[in-house]
Length: 615
Image 1 (tube, rainbow, N blue to C red):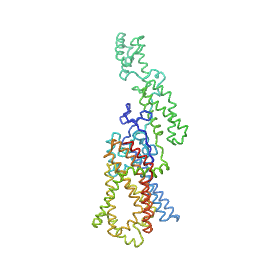
Image 2 (cartoon, helix red, strand yellow):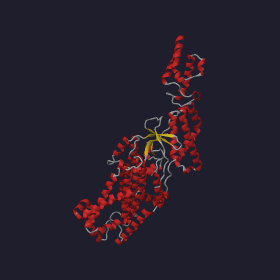
Image 3 (cartoon, rainbow, N blue to C red):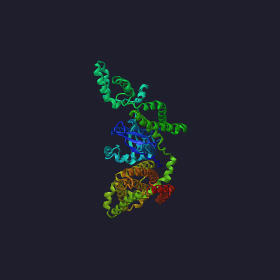
Image 4 (cartoon, helix red, strand yellow):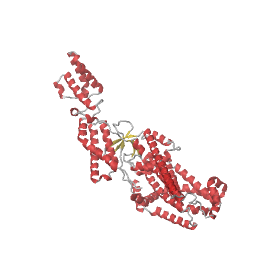
């Protein structure tokens, strides 16, 4: 996949947070923007909504396919093959919805699925940048682990409760955090009258103003000496709050307290209970810049609706200028002592523009094709060590199990299982009938085989990769298990003297499929190595870096398995002679070796230079 590196940002604790679940990031303009962490309840509800949406979509797909099939049968144009092709499309679409829904919405829709949008939460990168497509892919692939045991989401729940930023395993590996979308708040500065703007913020606290108001209300009933004595005592107590005022020399204490009460009343009425409005400077800033802020908010909504590219160069330039000015206004408002509500609103606006302007460009087909033809094989070569370890974990148990089954046929019966044993026993008869290991007509047709096999193999690869989050232990166990199964199956067929019968089916697609599984396992081991061998980085940094790199390998694995599925569905079960199938297998194996060894050499040199720079 094409890569996009977001600028590095600093993280710190916000000083004036409206709640204790807020984190602060710093934009490239050196302005801090706060985000409120999403709570567990909101995230769980969003997950339920998304699951409901996917279920409804799956039902619609099935009903649509059923309606097309029934209509075709009624009109007499339908056929068994047509029905199976339709069924194959249903399986493929179901797979795309299951694995692609969240990746698409989070990676290309500003971090919000339908459920997250309903709950007003979104996913962002740790630095506050919009989530990239790669980060969306890894956090959702690791759902396979987070949802354990058996779709209870127990692992995710424990991780989120223990993590200071409520992260599940997928968020830790992707370097993402789920935050709450901010909603507008009433800004006290908006309601400050002109007279209040001139005198600024309230000087007295609630108790002090209460004492002053009580004195002013009762002073007319007091004897003059008592009134003067009480006024002097009260003014002494308020001196620290009021500060020096040249008008005091021209008034008695009683007169000055009356003036102070009137002015403080104006300030407090403008600011509301507790004095929420900011200083006169903050109020003046609000009034002066309010039209520009309104224009900026309108452009944010326009950009969210149709994208920056559709706005044209002139308007995008204007939007960028307004964003920089708003970021500067946020810094000024902080300096001037603006109200928390004013700062909160400006932060929300700056954060929205930041997410739009710094969003990674959407991957286009030409970029994906360039990466597939060069970047992916170069990355595989760069990370050949974990791939080699994965291959050893797959093939060594396969060879050892094959040898054990050959020496002990009874072991093969136990390890191979009834299906493999039945197919091996029927191999001679089927071969005499001109049938291969799998016959496309018996299994629903080539299209169905392709759709089912490709989606199933991709799921296995995804699972092997996601299990890497267990420090690689889960990935290693899956590879060993599959190696044992492969060795047992080939050993059973060898015991029946039907090895060529089996291999004439497996070899056509096997080179691509098994290599893809080894690369997926290598990606999982590389992800898990962040816990055991982080190098000079912290484990958290290594996990994020290796997670984003390894998930790119999984994109290539998926493409390889689609190709393998095509051959497994259309060529391997065909009636081609064995010699023709073996020739195709040899051709594909040589092509795969050339692709992985030579493609993307310029990209490989760039990666090597980057690695040398890191050291």
